[in-house]
Amino acid sequence: MIARLLLCLAALGLAAPATPQAVPTPAPAPAPKAAQSSPPPVLVARVVARYPHDTRAFTEGLIWRDGALYESIGYEGQSEVRRVRLTDGKVIARAVIPANQFGEGLAGWKDQLISLTWHDGIAHRWNARTLKEVGQSRYTGEGWGLASDATGLILGDGSPTLRFLDPVSFAERRRITVHMPDGQQVDQVNELEMVDGVLLANVWQTPFILRINPKDGLVTAIVDLRSVVAEVKVTNRDAVLNGIAYDPVGKRLFITGKLWPTVFEVQLVPR
Image (cartoon, rainbow, N blue to C red):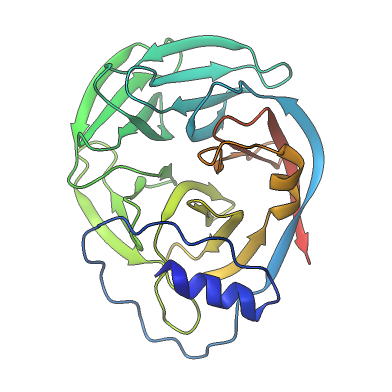
């Protein structure tokens, strides 16, 4: 439960944010029994650069591909997938998601982009170059975060469970449970991004990102982004941290949030 994360943060000397309301989710697989229960280390973000971001963009997914940011935008009637120029935040191409659907997580696979929907169980497939829709896939449960690795897709539904899916059929290959070193599970796991072989995931309505071992779901570090959130100075309660993208060639990590005015390029360093 997220309450366990907040207790862990308090033990590490971090002020606990308000606990969001629980979201009903499928029962996750049991977490493996941990050999030790020392809290994970804390990392902080050193801001390297700042770039403009559309303050009307309710960011649900963010990736870096072919020299640009790609962003999935939420809200019914406003959901779309965008190609965004990093330097000035200009939208240079967009694909509109049906008005009755709420766009969610985004990932790339070969020549496609794949975007989730919150309640509809529909994953839209887009040609990455043209942003024309080329197909759809179905999945069960809610769609929150989506990422890809060398073998397939990783889907989160807001619970502690992350499902590893075949990128073509969407068949489940395996699943992991996100858990602290003492075995306690963490829910509200949202936006996902694979970074040099490990998963980063933000925890909904908190200024923290988890570093997760994709083999077993163990949280190996907590990233404290309170200083970045404080700089944004948003007043809308929905304008939360939500957007992680990684440029594997330039080794650049980008973060943003829903309705934020800025995309931050950051480096993660020990506290």
